[in-house]
Image (tube, rainbow, N blue to C red; front, side, top):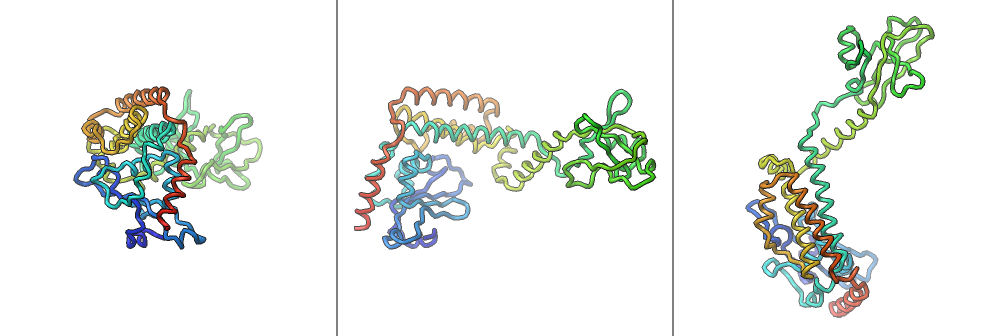
Length: 354
């Protein structure tokens, strides 16, 4: 079973609904339309060797879960599944009466603190990482080992590149020898001093991970002492790779929105962080999953960049503390009753396949 096959057999849908921003009431003129649903496999496929637990398109804008997978995720208090089950009536496209047997409220538990608020916390960390990337862009021109090497000069030090320029030397004509008991510190020699063999240069090229070492006969005095900031170079390589992978894969529309409001955070990401935190608080207090948001005005202020980044992080941390306290005093069960879900699944299959 794949998505195309499922969509040509609407009788297999137990539930199909518009999801995402349109279900939350947080959509705008450029919002995409997402779909989620629950389906049941044809009887022969279900009893056969290949079980299809979910189908989706390449961008996951449309994703549907087979009944068993749906109940399994429901028992884990997965936010997407609880939201799907509590979808507003005006967003439901197909609904089989058999779905009336499943109520979101019957599956709510203290797990929601982790699945809703815990996920929101991870999004705050993600937002911090994005903030760091936006505030600290990495130049496209990649630095090399030579940019992290320094030479003792006078009573201090200067960059290797400056030293080479002052001495009118090329790094390819120099060589390094380890200095015993000194980490990443080397004696520097020049080809003009060498009567046997040759020096390998300080760096073998842009892709080098370490300086090059040469063999130098005894008795020759070094022309300088060099220090290589190897840890700094390793961190730079990691930051460079992460930054330009992010640039390549980022959502340009969302990035342009971030640049537009100039607050250096992904406003859509932060909006949904607060949506999840507020939903977690509602579950603890009211034992309800409220998909259509009545805090739309506040959430849109976040999306429009009306708050500073640090202000939002402070507010999110305060909201997380509130959610912790609400769940501490909630009488929700620790976890959903797995047996209830199992019996429900069996009863629904028997009814549907009969």
